[in-house]
Image (tube, rainbow, N blue to C red):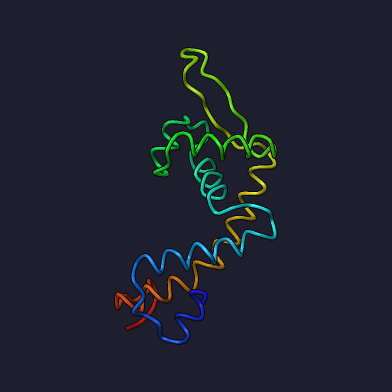
Length: 137
């Protein structure tokens, strides 16, 4: 069941873990046509906001183990979506940056993430009793 269906049919008694798993499935389905996994998408979007991020900082920010991030980055570099560069002052430090292809892909990812985000926002508003900005109560 997608978040959209859960919102439409009133399944608001989902546990946090169930909601996270549903979101992961929704993201995976939205990203499949552009051949990107949710984890790759997360790294790409992080690098879009943090150009020249260090590998260690990226792993920490995304709560990933360094070997896990290393595998993802290897795939992203192989697909030419990300470039890797060693620091000139400390060769142990590696910086990551989106390539032109990676930047173009980030825009596509953002569009697809928004498709999942809209129903989630409705669910959150309903669940928390929040009123969106600009709306009248």
